[in-house]
Each structure stands twice: as structure tokens, then as C-alpha cells.
Length: 336
Image (cartoon, rainbow, N blue to C red; front, side):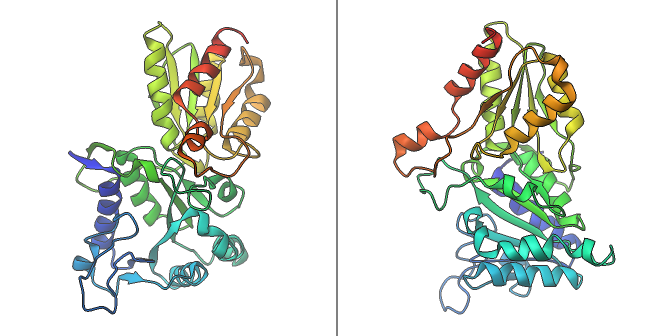
């Protein structure tokens, strides 16, 4: 075990899989940097340096800088997957998925079904998402609900360095297309992570806290927020369950219902826009299958239905906050 950052865990997962399987390739805008220049090679490693250092070990035949065209990148990666490679395609920001969504929605996600199971598409599409970095509306969105709506895609949102490594290795080895989403605010958080290769199965949520009074359900960066609130409430003798979903497709329905039935009080913290997001999906699931266990209304802590503000003060108000989660919890515990 070594203390690693979220960024280092992702880099290590890719490195280990590229060493293990020569069919694994990395492609994206500036994943290597310096292509065609006489200056420093491997200058970038992506916009936040996540893949820095891989070029020196694997060379430009497997670390492939692409032009600034997301449609071509995803088309190339999908075609490569169909012919036997295992591409890891880095879509610089999730906000840019609108440019290449036809490739994902109508091609990549459909190949296995349309070819009667005879074609597999082992592609991992990595992208960063989320607010809090003062990057404004076009670089701060939280769009994972869009991908969960598409049959044929698996959607992974890790919440810590340990999960980032295990889930990314699982993603690369999977024979279906995986959308692997990394919150921009998490790259520098650290945790003890095994040095060797390991996997975390899809569809298995993680209980990070266990209690009897209230349940918090988080996704990605909001899991840490839920943990902080649970620890604060513990000082008032209120015990909390915190459920980290880990994957949104497949969704661990059994753990969600178990957590809901255990406490009867549910707070779901979801950074995506409130209309048809993951919080509403989980709320519907609980209401359909475990309604009789509820001791109060399901509380959903999500941003308002507006674009992400550029103003720092407005962005802080926009995002789910510790105070907002505590307020929702107290209302439930007080019977409101």
C-alpha cells in the first residue's frame, strides 16, 4: 500500500493495464503533447497531467495525440475497439460530449446489440466533470444522467483514489463501452492504494458509514460531503449510513433498498441538474419498492436548474454544500 492521489491512481491503472495487454492504447487531445515539435516531449499528459509519463514507456504508437475533434476521436476509438484493441479515450471535458454524442449514442453503445452479440466494443471513455473550479458553464457540467439513459453503456463515477484505480482497471478489461467520469476537484486527494493491480466489480455500491438514524447516498465527490455530514451528526448521537454508488449503470438497487429500509430516512446528494437526475431515479426506485419503510419524504440535495455560474460566490451557492445537506437531514430527523 502506498499513499497515492486520485490522479496517480488513474495513471497507475492505465500503466499497469498497458503493461499487461499490448492491445490497450491511450488516445486523446494532448495526452502526450509535444507531437511534431522540437521542444519538450510528453509536455502535457492531458489538461491536468493525469497521463504524464506514459509516453516514455509506451511510445507514440500506443499513446496517441489526436486532433481537436471529439467526433473523430470517438469514432477512431470505437473502430479500434471493434478490431481488437482496448482503447482508453480521453474526452477532455464531459461538456464536449455534445460534439461526439452520435458516436457514443448511435454507434458505440449499439454495436453488441445490433450484431447479435458477435461484436464487442471494449472502449473506456474517460472524462472530467463537475463544478467548483471557476471554469464557468461550458466546462463545469455534471452530465452523467445523460449516459445512464443510454442502454449499452456502463457508467462509473469513483469517489476516492482506491476506487479510481480498481474501477478503471475493471473498465479497461470490460468488453462493453464504459463511461469513466472523474470529478475535477478530486485529482489531488490522497489515500492508501495497493501498488498491485486489482479490480472492483461493477454494480456493487460501498457503505462508507453505517448507522440507524438516516441514510445519505452520494455520487463521486458528493460521497466525501456525505461522510463529513455523517461525522458531524455523530457528535449529536445521530448515526448515519453513507452509500457510495460507485457505478450508475449498472446500479446496485439491492444496496440502495437495504440502506433505505434500514433507516427509513433518505438524503440523496447529486451534483447534476435536478430534472431527471440520479437523485430522482433513486427516489423513484425507493418509492416503488420500499415506500412502506419510509419515515418521511425523500430529500434531494441538487443544484438549481440553471447553468453553472462563473461568479465564485454564485457557484458556491449553486453546488451542494455541507450546510445544505445538514439542513435536509435535520428536517427529516425533525419530522418536517
